[in-house]
Length: 205
Image (tube, rainbow, N blue to C red; front, top):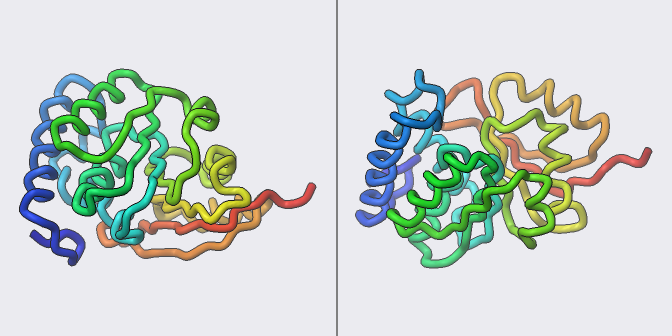
């Protein structure tokens, strides 16, 4: 199977397909994603999530904030299983969604742990990580406040999904933060990007 131009094993394909089936069942009772996007689950959500892992395709400790329906956290955890190494910490404060995430990890035997806490409370419970991911969570300046405890003074990088308005968010965030930025075009949405953030630091007051 090819995923974003990269071959994945038969076992990984089966895990992704099982996740999609499981997602469809749970989505009938709880709101995991916008209902209008359910018919595009594979391309709109699974492939879109996989591109983050493909920007850092090696064993790593990931922190996925606002994991929601498992995008990109569960997909990252499934793909990490190919290495039999690395781990994903999924932070989701909604307990129904957190329950779904736990079941998804268990049934796909993916490499991750669910933390049913607010992001602010996760800061003292989850240690160092290599990569931080977030999808459709908040504006960039607020995201930086969330992720700064893990990033300031470290080599941790963030891979953040953003839509067509990302330049406004970047310009606004530069008012309070300095950071290195690489912009990766989305393989799914022509108006979307993945922002790769590193060396995040607050500006002097």
